[in-house]
Length: 212
Image (cartoon, rainbow, N blue to C red; front, side, top):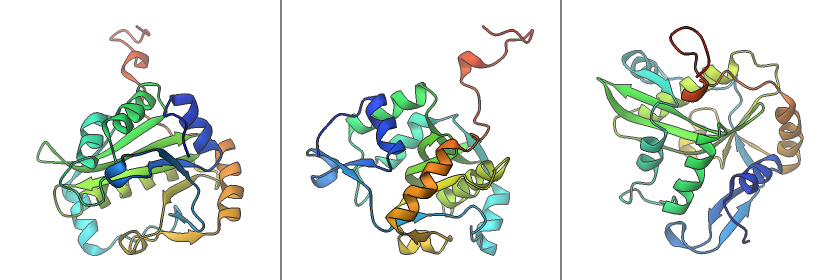
């Protein structure tokens, strides 16, 4: 319990198998650092896509890192039950995003943000933090896109951590993993190749192919 949400603190925590969450209602109160036993994990070859979800995926466009702040704001909506994302938490993960460590996967329908998720990526680990939907299956569609991204170039050791297994996540293929096994997988994932995340704007080639 305690500490801060500085980028170095957060990255050290994820590398150790921990993630932060406020101990008070609505995410307020002192910071707690969690390492659940068991831990919710989605095997990359275990995602369950129903027929209705497959139809939703075909109707949507999945983008990565084009609306990070909007995704965090959607996840932090005060009208959602169990909300825990405070302004300090949002600012901390936005700082991580600006440094290239946090990413959003977004579902767009008819040019509008319909849902998405965000999390922290270190090596082959993606630690999912939160997801939201404004249309049916929008968060699930983003998850399908994330799994496809993580599977591309996977050496067999990438890890998709969802913190806790819920009935909703279990319907998508999330399983419980004992803490000891999770930490073993984490060690391998941290050494695994990173997925091909989009370059940050300042790293993208200019019109002539030169770096700015």
